[in-house]
Image 1 (cartoon, rainbow, N blue to C red):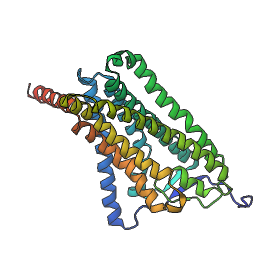
Image 2 (image 1 turned 45 degrees about the vertical axis):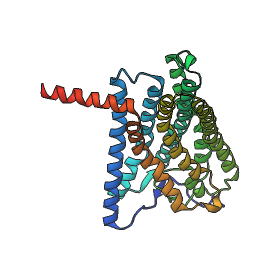
Image 3 (image 1 turned 135 degrees about the vertical axis):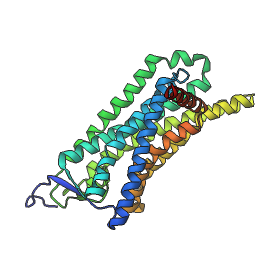
Image 4 (image 1 turned 90 degrees about the vertical axis):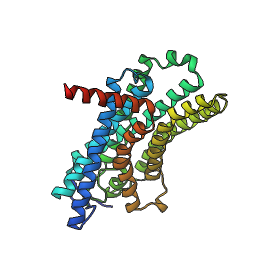
Amino acid sequence: MDHRNHSPVTYFIFEPLIDAPILKILFFLLVLTMYLMTMLGNLFIIMVILTSSVLQSPMYFFLQNLSFLEIGYTSTIIPKMLSNLLLEDMNISFSGCATQMYFFGSLGIAECCLLAAMSYDRYVAICQPLHYSAIMNRTSCLKISMFCWIIGAMVVLVPATLIFTLPFCGPNKINHFFCDLPPLLRLACTNTYTNEIIIFIITVVFIMLPFLLILISYIHILHAIFKMSSTTSRSKAFSTCSSHITVATLFYGSAVLTYLRPKSISSVKSDKALSFFYTVVCPMINPLIYSLRNQEVKDSLKKLIGIKAFLSRI
């Protein structure tokens, strides 16, 4: 497309998610409730782990990091989404869109790496229990978590630079509820084939590689569990892995369907639905999964609530 006769885009406009005023208010209340549950749930997980001596292990250290990540990347999207629904302020500046996409992408990549680190932690705990304390010591855990955060921050610089150095000369309406890669590429007024290939390669590497590491870890874990002679040991091993498997399946399932689906079977409505699932629904239910399916977390939570109830009566 010839963009020489067009003014460069200085802001973008989000397409309305819902047009009917009553439905818009109801949807606003739904999203606000889910966002508050996400914040409270993840903050509660962080607080329980910080205050419990039982939960001072690598698995829960990584879970704390996961909660921080989910607070971060939902907060890059949902407040603006709520503003769009309530105030009908559908505009976002060019720099604001770039910032939103960068932080969402970097925190998302960091979560991919962190979920892989959590599966490695379970692999060492179950398959190499005698070496667990030596391999997964405090220094190792800090290095792994820092690597996850840094790799997310660095990797997303490439697609963000590739996209926001493209010419945008109109239209400037994003058919989505946040600044994501696919809808922004559609708005560029130039050929984006090279950019799409580079971004696709980056996406495959940093979504599928951690996923393969998780898959390999759990193949070894399942093999080790089935070799256990004690039913109690097998049950305990399964219980420590079930929460992580559930969270990883939900996260990777929706991410793969969103970013690695062929264009021929994708649509704007399905992209929005999948994006809503992994940006709003998953971060809300993850604290519930970890608290309801993990006996140690439940026990620590009961103790914390008991202490608070006791202090309130003093």
